[in-house]
Length: 257
Image (cartoon, rainbow, N blue to C red; front, side, top):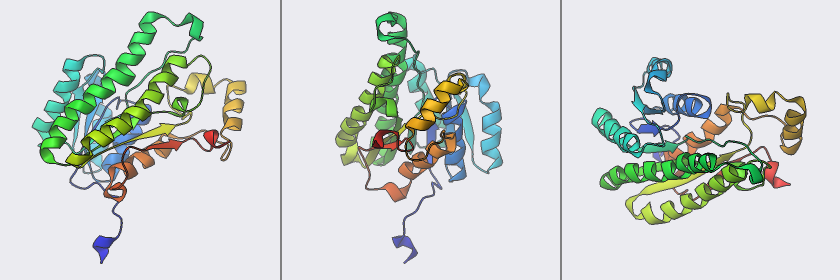
């Protein structure tokens, strides 16, 4: 009878998290370990992963820091290969790495445009491709992409970032449909402003912070990294076994009004 109930733990699974060094990536990595997964840490600079690896190992799970600059596709494919070599399998990929230089649309520089697409879209696609090739052989896997509420509402000075995050939500549907026959689920999460090192400068502005809290219409608070990590763990868990192609908004009600 107990087997009939939803299971939210990830015991026996191996996860790879891109952009794992800080903020959402760090919280997601710790939450996956807390749920029972061993975690490979994709890092733009592998020397920054030691402390996080120790925190994960303190939970009784295994951790593997990996060099994984998302603009270098050789590093992306090598990180997936190294995860398999070390752990013997790969069950979960979290495409967390992303960036978004702010600039008014009329002032966007070509180099910023190219970098944002290289990390947010190209990196996400080819990390998913590399992981899926492994998951297809396993006939099992789960991918969770990082979209954003910016993919659903317009944010001034963030047109290129918004565009990439909208594309992630649709890519999620495409990959879910294409890889479902291999028992691979593909979903995404779309957070609002979350308190991370990346958003700290903007949220330090009282007027900006007040506006954000007002726009988070239902709950009126800034999100915390674990608010996002909880949804990621759920989507990666057996409890979400019939959910694929979906993007969960974690926006406190911002897009509801």
